[in-house]
Image 1 (tube, rainbow, N blue to C red):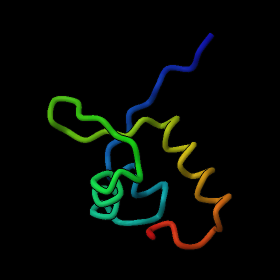
Image 2: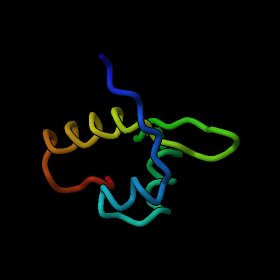
Image 3: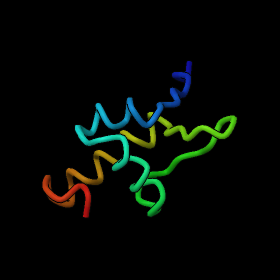
Image 4: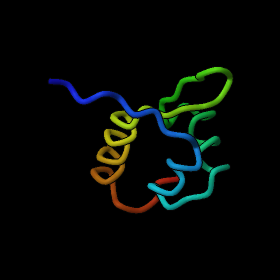
Length: 66
């Protein structure tokens, strides 16, 4: 059985990435972090966030905000 998707709020994403919420919005606006809008509110798919984090760790643990 597939695990249901979890849509995260920017505040939750910020806590996971250990950055501030505005940085999450910036990553989304720049196209670095995939997102969607649900009722006008920004949401990030937990599975895509995991993939983003894995890709960042492979490219060099530092410079997540480049």
